[in-house]
Amino acid sequence: MTVNQEQLAKIASGKGFIAALDQSGGSTPKALKLYGVEESAYNNDAEMFQLVHDMRTRIVTSPAFGGDRVFGAILFERTLDDSFAGQEAAQYLWNTKQVVPFLKIDKGLEDEANGVQLLKPIPGLAELLARAKAKGVFGTKERSVIKANNAAGIAAVLDQQFELGQQVLAAGLVPIIEPEVDIKAADKAEIEVTLKKGLLERLDKVDPKAPVILKLTLPTVDGYFQELVAHPSVLKVVALSGGYTRDDANAKLARNPGVVASFSRALTEGLSAQQSDEQFNKALDAVIESIYQASIA
Image (cartoon, rainbow, N blue to C red):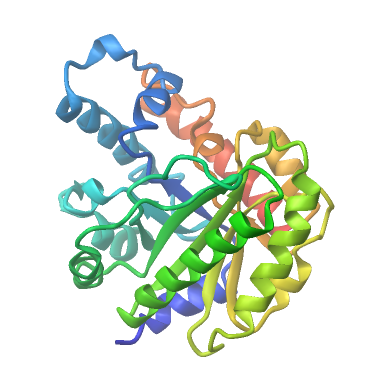
């Protein structure tokens, strides 16, 4: 199965960034609280997920949100079966907004071992990938976490990520490989040396005709991922905000040419359920413009 070539071209050459709108069950209460919705506002998971879907809907249907500055968006699995403005979510993103849809497929993280957290098993993966493809999704996202410069742990993360990536590619989708480095790690710079070496070794075995996307923590050394940006088997290198404030994340991003944003919490920072539509759209426009400018710097 082949990927959508129009969407592939948009990711490869488009200026802008990928919005991460994939908060899952574990991160949703925090995301809602930052948006001004307290836990007392909902009684169960169904009500909680409806409220976060309302937040996502407000973002993607805003006139500020479109493919001119946001070329991709990552959805949570529940959102795949939901709708925006009366259209299926993935179809709305592409057909109405010209934003390429991605899907978060991981089921969370294992407990830490060897300084890392591997992906939990993903039951029903083949069916999920087929369903995503049928609904117009372009690619997937899967996140692991590295907390220490442990060579065995980092190798295990990368082996798992690239094995899963090959399954995603075989299903006709493009994987976002995400070995996040904890920004609080004492040896963050050393981790990045080991990580880059491991990434380059594995990328050399990936067919450039079926490239992958890398989602990485902003590096300690500016421009450190340049070899990854230039690699023929890499479609795009995107950066997560990783707990940095939006201002800090934007400043770091701007010092890494060729890397673009894929922010989640930093994207919604400053947005509030209590804002009028006019206030919300104005705030979102300013947020998107700041992240866009940092991404094209």
